[in-house]
Image (cartoon, rainbow, N blue to C red; front, side, top):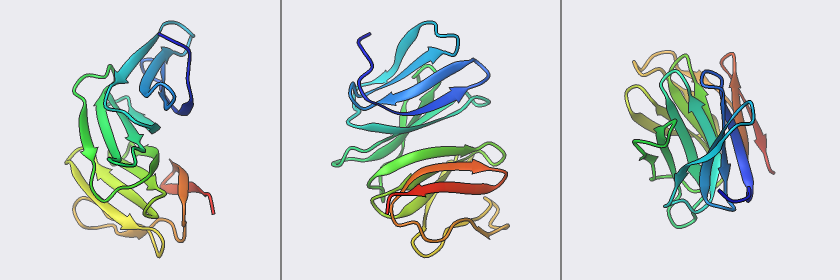
Length: 172
C-alpha cells in the first residue's frame, strides 16, 4: 500500500467502524478502521477518477462514482469490495456526491454534467433521473408520495440528506 494520492470523498460505516474514501490519484477505493488500524485497498482496477462514496452499513453495501469522461458510472460492491457491479452508466456525465436515504433504501447523486440528481432505489433496483435545472422531484416506488426536493442547481457537486431534506453545493 502506497501513499494516499488524492482523496476525493469519505464515508463512515458506524457499524463496523471503518472509514472508506475514494482516491483519484491512485484510482482506488480504500478502507481503514476508525481507530487508525490497518488500511487496505477495497476496490482497484477499471477506475479512472473515483469521486463520490457512500455506504449502507445495514445492507453491507458500498457505492462510488467514477468521473471517467469516456465512461462515467456509479458502482456498488460489498463493504469488502466483493460482488462489484455497475449500477448506472447511461444518462450520466459527471457524477459527484452520493447519499443514501436509509429509510427508503434509495441512492441519490449529484451529476454536474447534466445538472441532475439521480435516484436509484436499492431494494428494487429501479433507476431514474430527475432534471434539477427546473425542479427536482421524488416519488415512492409505489408511485405515490410525489414531492419536490430542490429547485435550481446548475452545477451540483456536494449532496447530503437530513430528515427528508436535500442539501447541496452548486459550483456556479
